[in-house]
Every structure is written in C-alpha cells, then in structure tokens.
Length: 330
Image 1 (cartoon, rainbow, N blue to C red):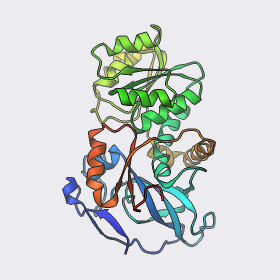
Image 2 (cartoon, helix red, strand yellow):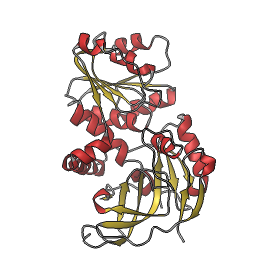
Image 3 (spheres, one colour):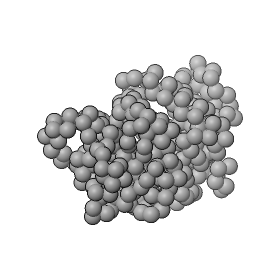
Image 4 (cartoon, rainbow, N blue to C red):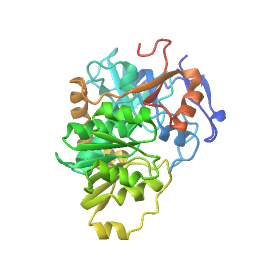
C-alpha cells in the first residue's frame, strides 16, 4: 500500500502523520504517478499549518511539486506512457508515494535531470520566468535587483535575469546564499541584513536607480527596495514571508513606477496557453543545461516534519526535497 503525509485538520506539523494512502486508478483525463521526490516550499508549510491566504480542504496532503514515474493513464490520455519520467504539481498532494493528477499538469522531465532536481524545478522557474518575462518585460541592459536571492524563486530569478541580459544585483542574508547567487549569474551581491543596505545597492549600481525589483520577501524589504527604483521601474510582488508591506502609495506616483503582482496560479487559470508555453520553453532551456535548481538537502518521507521545519527556518542554501526511495534521485 502506498503511503502519504496526511492530517484531518490544518495546523501544527504534529497533526500530520505518514499513513497508508492509495488514490486509486486514474479517471478520464488523469494520470497516476509513482512519486519519487517532492519539493518542500515555504508555501507548502503555510498551507499545511493553515496560515496561507486560502485554506486547503481537509483531509490534506501537503506538497505542491513533485517528480516521478507514470503508473497508469486515464481515458483519453495519450501523450504519456507507463514508465515515463515526469514532473507535476498542484496545491497539495505531493508528499505521497502515489498521486492522481490531471494530465495537463504533467510534463516530461528535462533531459539530464534526476527526480530530485526535477521535483524543485517547475514552480520556481515558472514563477521567475512569468515575473521577469511576462510581467516586468525585463530588457537586456536593465538592472535587476533580486531580493531573497539565495531562496528558491530568487535563485531562479538570478539565473533567468542573467540569461535575459540584465545586470543582476543579488540581495541575500548570508555569505553562503550570496555566493550561491553569484554562482547563478549575479554580477554582485549585497548583505540583506546590512544597516546601510540602500547605500550598498546604490553603490552596486554605480549610483543609478534600479529598473526592476524581484521581491519574494515582503515586509520592510519591500519599501526600501521600491525606493531604489527609477522612473518606469517595476517592482514584482512574488511573496511575503517577511509580512505584508504597508507601502505608501505616493511612492509609485512620485517615481512613475509600478507595483506588479505575480501570481502563477492566476496565470494558469486566466492564460493557460501562455503558462503552458512558458513551461515548454523552460524545459527546453533546462535540457540544454540552463536554469537548474540547487538542492541543499534531501529527507526521507518519514522525516517530513524535519524537512518542513528546515524550510521554515529559511537557512538552507538551496532547496529541500523529500524522497520516497532510499536512494535520493533514484
């Protein structure tokens, strides 16, 4: 019998346990996947503990992205085959040894990736691409500041921004995370905890204002970063683990700058063809050796709580992945 991490109520991680769980055969338009690895994100922790903006239905299986092997196909699904290595995701259900998903959420793994890497590639890369390409329309030669540059989406934004030809300045809280961002393509990096952070950013950009801010942090970081923007600058709101900012609305007016929301789920609903095209492009580029995620650590399914706690601490230099097999990446 396959197993999954399940709770009948949202709340503390102590509510969750590994139980027998079989999702059953795939229905029309569905794919049953034997999960090999699942990424753990801060949003997963918020969802599981009932602290996200929308409350997930219960009983709840956490996890929003995974990679595995096709086990069975539902009626009408012809684009995949049993035994094929794929990646998928949703708004729950990934911390399990078997998952049922709609076929349109499934994609072949990028060439050269193992299950662990593929499990944390999709959401971060798609978010960064949608933000920088669709929402900010980042241009070659522009300056991009990436907050939280050592985190999941931040690191992806560094890679994609550099590939798009922007001059990337990374902001991260530790030397290790700043080193990771420099490895990913940032031209320079500043200490997010510095008492003279704005001066450091200005110096990194030779005193010029910024063109684009990629902000998956929120809180106090949002206003101080927005103040670094120039005319027609774009501030991308990607997330706010640091809290929801109370940005004075006179700042966008005075600067002629834009506060731009980035919501991957909304794009997938409102513009599914665009979202699908973005994924196709990213898989192609990843297969050519670009935009690969960095994995900091892997944990077995039985230690899901420790993996989620590590993500909530936010000190890891790279992604945390839960594996369903004894050998990571198998």
